[in-house]
Amino acid sequence: MTTSLNSDTTKPTKQILVLGAGFVARPCVEYLAREPSNKITIACRTLSAAEACGAGLPSISAISLDVSDTPTLEAAVAAHDLVISLVPYTYHATVIKAAIQGKTNVVTTSYVSPAMRDLEPAAREAGIVVLNEVGVDPGIDHLYAIKVIEDTHAKGGKIKEFFSCCGGLPAPEATNNPLRYKFSWSVRGGLLVCFTPASVLSSGVVKHISGADLMQHAHPYSIPPNFSFVAFPNRNSLPFQTYYNIPEAETVIRSTLRHEGFTEFVIAFSKLGLLDSEPKEWLQDGIEWRELTRRLAGANAYDEETLASRIKTICSFSSDLENDRIVDGLRWLGLFSTDKVLARNHNLFDTFCAHLEGQMKYQPGERDMIMLQHKFVVQWADGKQETITSTLEAYGTPGGHSAMALTVGIPCGIASQLVLDGVIKTPGVHAPYSKDICDPIREKVELEGLGLVERVL
Image 1 (cartoon, rainbow, N blue to C red):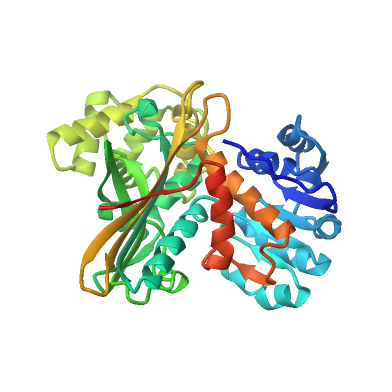
Image 2: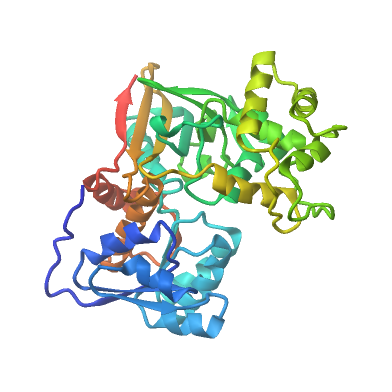
């Protein structure tokens, strides 16, 4: 569903600079292009990519720009009323510094990093809004966490437990490989979340989980009527007790969702050394995948029976059936084949990521999905407890935008328009952790059909 922005024909022209032309940029630009007073410049190192991102839309121009070229970046940012930074997060602080100098508002979909937070005083002094975390996770998740928490507190209740799970996944009919997963974004990023250290608050106890142990903390997570996932902790949940104003909570856990059967493969990849990012002199273009697997497994031959036996010994899952499932998946991935390895950066991790890019991509006609759910255990003043869920189930369109692109790009566009319109106007570095920011964004998100559905269990 799309809506007009109901433009006032007397509105002054606003100049918007979009840095980056990746897959989330197009839905964002499409949303902003609905407002006739917006003039949008898409900037990318590759001019053709910027032109393609804005093709067919009104009031769009494209330029070639390298964000590492500070003087050029500063000049471009200063010439616009708002800059949307969709480049890698490591560049956001550089963009914000340019925006402070040019007194230009900023929007990003990324978490607020320490380097970005350090620019808070300068952003306030410059009088600019730097609004971050306005994608899906982070983004839409904040909008509905704040809504339920604020509503509960207003009614005299307390949040005793807070769980939040989100996953970018293949739609059920597209889970047609042994891993039941496909990559709609960076393969490297998709694997890194599987061994990034995490911290949670569980029944009043703070738990720190190493990246190496993260998959061991995956657990079944069902969403009625018919979804069976696994969930594993997502980064550091602890600050959200403060961000969401729930000091009374005894449990605060944010998790990543995958379809059942995925996490065991990540454990196998790790045990075999496929996630090792240290350089290997022997890793060269042209060796066969079966030889690479033989080396990693420490096998004395590369016939399939020998490799399978060694892998079962190394991985040692809970049953013969599970060991067979993992071996079958590794066979499907081509690790026992005579196919030639294309080495990347002389390390196994990047080489394996490059291999997965070809093996685990979406095929024409297939859809992805976003599943996001909050679960709140609420205690009311009379002592009664109840569980509230808030759920988003969104699907991509074959031949159109993916669910990931829509649920990141549309909220980003909405937040940008609200900053341009002066609805969100307090100077400083912000994320959607308060009603004054969340409520107007959520209202527009719901008009786009991306709102969460609440249920009391």
